Length: 166
Image (tube, rainbow, N blue to C red; front, top):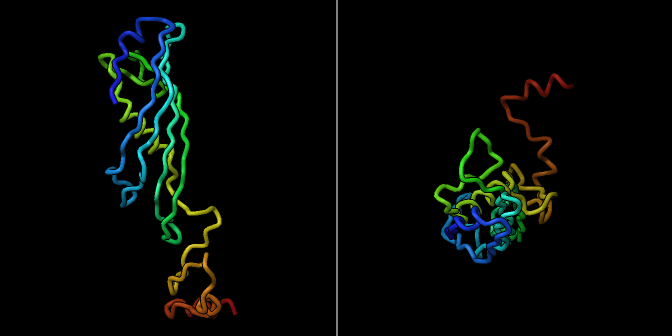
């Protein structure tokens, strides 16, 4: 959604409310389409003492695959962000969002913030045990028989090193 902010930059004390749903159901990420529902974006853009600030919150639900056990899981997320908006920069600074032509593409900004918010490793739980490296059994559901013998299973190319430990 694009917002015209000309009046907001010119009038101190001006406030513009934000409340809409951003449909990211077709957005591909991590080899799938994780956004199960539209992202609810709500907040405000306001000019206080000549400083234009964007404050918003985004609520969304993701359906992802765990990086360790490969099971699909669902996670509800809540993101709160604050950005200072400017029409031009004198120096190279990442702390400000440049609004060219007084028009703000909020969809792109929200998507960027969500992508930066997401962890690089997606886990169904912090204590996920993953898969057995030998048989592929999901260790969260129980142990497998090969786990007991895994210590005895040695790559034949490395058996010479095993003898050094004896």
